[in-house]
Image 1 (cartoon, rainbow, N blue to C red):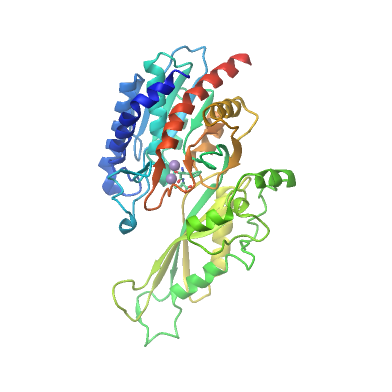
Image 2: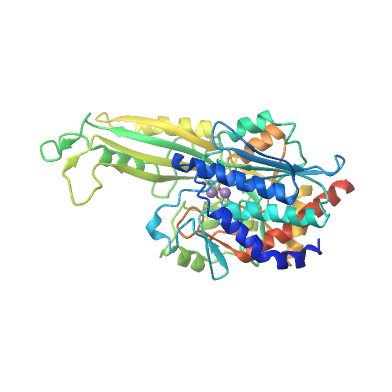
Length: 458
Ligand code: BES
Ligand code: MN
Ligand code: MN
């Protein structure tokens, strides 16, 4: 795939400009007011696959946002790679913290700034351009299928049924995903695990209407105060989660594995500086890297209730709410965790309030092997383009559909992402390095080549 290098150079400006066109489409899956834009992004992607020479390029409707499908079958006796990614993005807010508008991409310091630049439009676009280059030079070495969805950021709830209904069409030998990070631009890594996610919303009700906080204050439960107390009780002084049974199924990581993890380069100073914090915090007995990858968590994502307008209002609110998520590790399950949470959370409520808990979406944790053909192919590909052997590394984030791929298609995913943890995904000023974008385009064809070659050896 050496022949592609000069072509990447020649086409760099065009590739970046096309990506910026995609980034201008505000495909926010969470917010229904963007529904037409989400569709527009899907059509944009489909058209680019078509222009690159793919067959069966389709925008396929689902009960939610559509799936983009495209494929190129060159020879049924050759292996087939199924590329998965997502074209939907997180909501851009808080808007006032962006240095430039989230859907008006700009390049600054060799980085493209826009919502979705890294997660995941920039990384999806690397695959489209890598495919285009292999097609235009007649060097696609195997079959490829693309499934790019529009609901990853809201839990992929309609993709599961799509996958189950399209098992034959999706038949392949490996799933290739670029939606994760490398450790650093000079320390490439391959993602070998994702945490799962259980997400719930809680509602605490005191009196059945808002009250004057002088007339009633002191005599009636304040649901916000109560909710805060209940949330505080979910962790102890060591930051262990107190839900009974929560850790029962948590995979015990061997001392050797923990030692291997500790060898990955990590600068605590750089970490704190990037976050603007004086000290880190987390579960006693574990390193920051462990806390954010191999250990489960519980976090409040949002909390509201009462008066939050200008000035002050003396009110004893009737209701308080919070959105709470738990990141799961092997072998915790969403259903079990949700059940444990609900039982415990309700038990924390004093008789002066009523509590409702509503589960949202979830996803199971995954681990992927380092001795697979796909891992070897990815390792060789990255070694070729980065000049060093990549390190296996687990990620703290979640991609809910990956566990389902394994269950329904019987396929492991190979997660070869090119982002950096400092790319501010989901935050204001999300960006993606041009180095990373181009490195992805360069590396992907080598993965195709090596995967095809090793599969033939077998
Ligand atoms: N690409 C991320 C997941 C990710 C980020 C994995 C960084 C590894 C490293 C993905 O788009 C994401 O944000 N997933 C959500 C899932 C949720 C919305 C169901 C997450 O992890 O919060
Ligand atoms: Mn993503
Ligand atoms: Mn995301």
